[in-house]
Image (cartoon, rainbow, N blue to C red; front, top):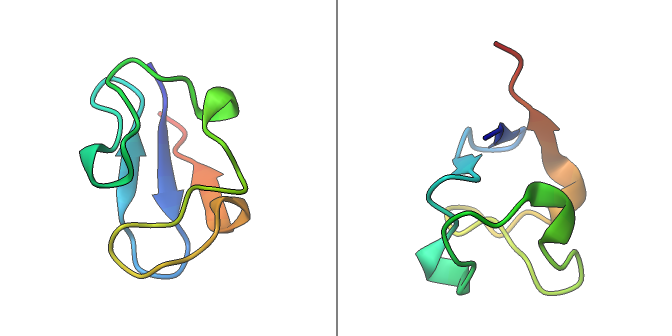
Length: 55
């Protein structure tokens, strides 16, 4: 499972855990997260402000 980091505040979206604050279920792939609904729970940034974390 991949992780994505908010380039504004550093919040990490982890596909394994989802994002309970935004009602995104655990196991939800990043590409399946609704870009119109999702906001960073820490700073409110939009989905396009996230970059994939490379191993």
